[in-house]
Length: 195
Image 1 (cartoon, rainbow, N blue to C red):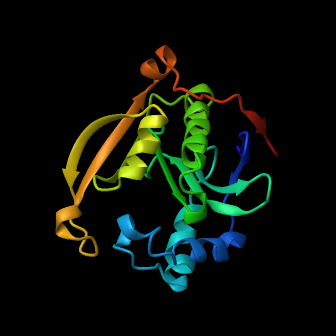
Image 2: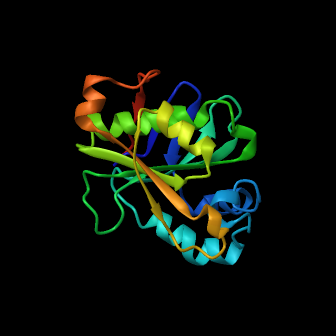
Image 3: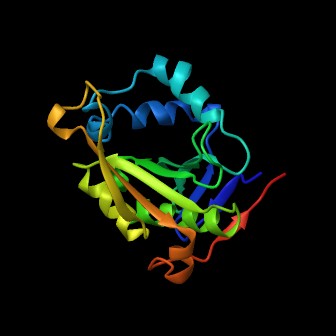
């Protein structure tokens, strides 16, 4: 089972129950939550009772990874690479949620490229996709820098998000495209596997 991945600046390790305080802090920042819940923090009770059990339900090589800054040991947020329950294993979703102090420093792209590389080189992925609100320009830029391409826009009904912002965009990267033109900045990864 894949426990962690190292990039130049990040250690991506599996999220555990011990990360509950990190998750509460992350989801308490209104700016982090702006495009997710309209800026409303996620309560500790919800994280303990719903969010963390869902995160921990993913096993094997896919799931949620805490992003740790190697130079400081600081928790910067999380990444995910997982097929949603009931969806094809070879079409995992890529996602990320980082603390504001990590924004604009290339961490989201660095972690995303590492997980995309892992998906295509070791996990047999045919396609990696990501979704975000159309208004989330920062997240869209990360997807593009990581090599994903726009696929479609669709509407969601999420009452906590203003109606004018309830459009979601989907981006994807297919194996054939990735093999033909690996994204700029593709990383040589040092994998660390633990039994």
